[in-house]
Length: 406
Image (tube, rainbow, N blue to C red; front, side):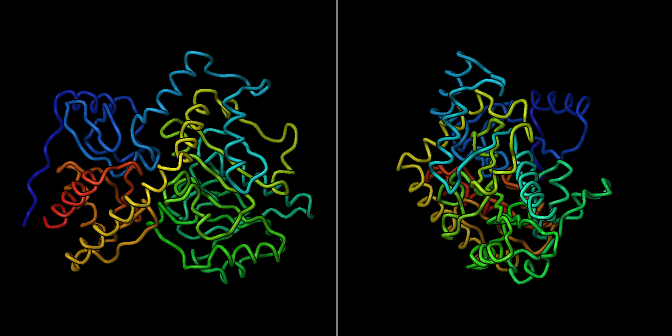
């Protein structure tokens, strides 16, 4: 069955798209959708058409669009004070740091604006740690990883396409296959100071490592006096069913980086560290003008408090089980098209047989009213808000099923 041609954007959307094409540097491959309004797991375009959001704005709105607690916190803070220099103190910043430390392995926090900034802080903390141990500076990361778009972050990213055209890369990084702890240990040299991995690779194709992987990395790091650093930018803040994904392994890292959904859509990031990892970042060694911003930190406080309310995370696990069962059923129904369904919690990947069909299915799903994306060329990344309702899960599965069938 051939799919009908996509519905063209309405007049309001078309005008906004044309203006963006005229004035923005074209660094993004955009769909012809202009999102004007959102509520929970639903979005509406500039011409009023409703769609289901199974992408959560690249996993930034775990609590859905315009969550009432987060919206109220932003409004209250914006009416009080928007920004305070880090030369002074502010209550939202102190409260967020307290929440992150008291609900993790960490002892201290560095607040910033994005995942790339959080990973930059982690890399700088690792280098300071190594500087005090004979000048060690190398970090082992995983092939297929993604850690951001700044120079240190793209150097840490185990994907050559991200670094292409920006050479020479920042030295000091080695790469090992994801999920292979023996390969990580083999990559360790005399200058190695840390290991940086994602608990689940998101941009790399929603890849879940073998059971025991993080535990083995913890043992390797302890034996070689290395920092274990976990990039939880995509997996943190309830995305996998627990506050942090690594909680499900029983492993405590030395450093964890957060962003994306930490503020449920506003730009806020954090590096959480234990005492030994944080010790090197002393007075004047690092900073961020807008790190700790009052409005974004107030949003993050409301986000974390909602995740800790005793209802949101259990409901997220129930929703994840329903979603996964439905995706598995679709995979069984289309064995000629679907290679594998995998993931953890509400971060799921459906790997199709080739890139062309993955793009076609995503495009058709969007036209039918379901927003998701393709990563690692042929993997449909499916990550609805964790507050999605059962009827919205069933509706989305129906739309995805139609897209697969066509």
